[in-house]
Image (cartoon, rainbow, N blue to C red; front, top):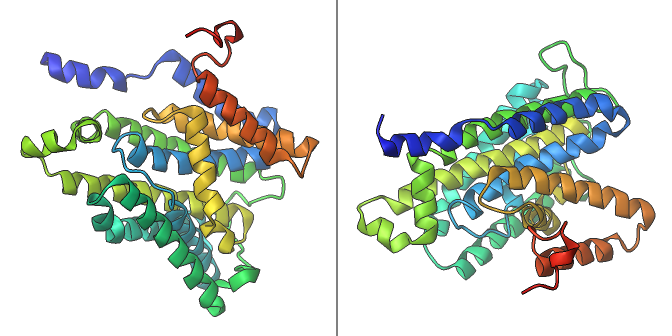
Length: 318
């Protein structure tokens, strides 16, 4: 094996702390059984964050409308369960496919243009889908949402319970599978070329690589993962509303990456955990002003730096 191949394969090897982290995540629904619903929300947001990090952290594509894929995945899975078949896995596949299809269709608008153009285009797509879902209320339920979404048992045996234990294991399982696949992807030659394009796109194009083809591929994969996250939300809550297209969805997942960091997959997972736990704790103390305190935490994080956050004695050093 050549030195280049060894360098590419080295990061793929699982570290001890990664294995320990996943063991703790799998144990969380048992240890914190009363907070299974929160764990389910964390897993869904983490999957959503992974999809955004794939295009932002690895490909350098800025998006403020990632909720578009999340929303179509949620509605796709909910409509499939209500009118076709309530099987969770088939519904998850439908939500993923619908999100990926939308990503494939909109990718030509992303592959070209500046960062500002991409911001406007991604936000525009999400706003258009929001209004379409509101307009066709006979299909989507409009402002009242799509109600009566009843899911069948997982694998024909595990019923979704009110305590959300099955839902949390279901979402964690999907998150783990996505994490493993993305881990292989970002350390493959495709992943290395994406990072090269992020840093210097003209040079990559000069080397003869298909920049547009790679951006289309990664954008489609990321959209599919976002669709899967939306599908999980609709399936585990039994409800889909216009809220899945709302701007706050895109903002929340961006904040999760700000907290956890971009360009490494654990950033999305850690950021989702921190964001949801902070949201739950602060809103439990003050419902009205939780956004203020969360914003203050983010300001401190940006000013101090993620690396020095837990080292107060270094905050005032240059």
